[in-house]
Image (cartoon, rainbow, N blue to C red; front, side, top):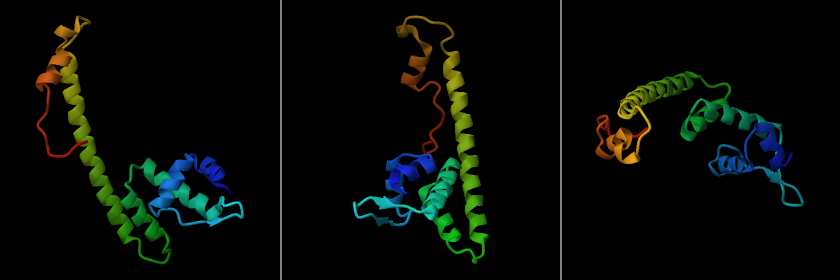
Length: 141
């Protein structure tokens, strides 16, 4: 199949496939006489796996590691368990950060309860002065 067909099968853009190829997540493929990339069922299966990993908010490095484990079906999956445990910790940390962000936004929202001239807007004033700003943890969302 051509790259457009693979993109359709994988429910992604052609640029996404090229990006995954560039990052080494999808293996190099052969080309037709007309210089079109030629993909097989293995590419589609691997792309689906990558897309599922991305839907779980995994990084490219995490996906690369999982693909490495997947490419060695006889190996022990202890490393897969460790990777997922680390990812769960990362997700829990992000949830905590997002909860704090939600509190900050709600505090800002309470600073302007009705429509009024923007010069009197409590939300804009709060953002400008950092009134509702939570302590900086050193890490961004």
